[in-house]
Image (cartoon, rainbow, N blue to C red):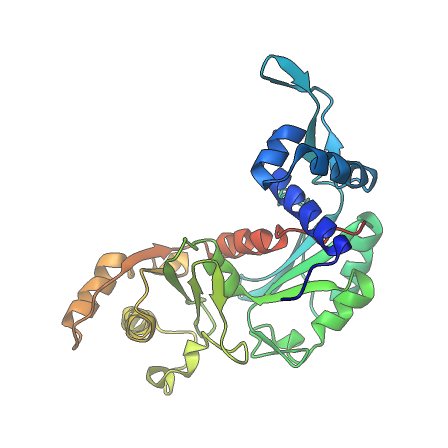
Length: 326
């Protein structure tokens, strides 16, 4: 068995303390940290000063009362660095780009929405944002497509198809970049311990996409191509946008396919608001009841605010514990 080096043990323990403080917004005393981390108070005493010096944690101005005596508490410094969340959104028959600046707790500090028409305009927007928020260290991007070999492929935003988006962001913002399919980000909002949750998204103008999360783990396939349900056989002769007369049939057929392949506990179906009178859990269940095969129908939820679910998921991804640079 490979033994940990002392410096690795120290980094591990500091990361553990940081994770605990991120979840406890009111702050924790040394003794509370020691008990929660299963470390001695002496060890915690040795770890904290360096974390304070590097501004990952800050002493609270008002000490907490613990057991009748006052003890200094420590709090995670959510402003130690910032995260840039970028979202490509379908709106008014166009793809628009929104930029969100968040702290390390996921609180949105600023929102910038621009009609970015191409990669050059996108790069200029990044330059402006970095000048205003120089402490951005991580970028999380939600795209209506898939990144393959460093370039955006299968993109609904035609102007960005084939663009090396990661390289552009690395040149202007930072090297820590996460690019995620928008449906994958949205399904993360609904993840549950040990549960299999599927999501299907039908944009108003473009082909649908799907995603699957198992517990905390997103299933993306061997080549990040899982969920490209527009390649299912029942879409072979279908053109987009769908006619309203075909909406119910194709949504329900896609749900049927997800049940047959993954047998999830829950399916979230994202649809445009204009379809809300056509699609409901009841209409989908009725279609499944008439289909051949013995289906065990999972919990079905129909949502009309895909953009918000996607944004929430992207922010959650950005909140993952930062790598501490001591």
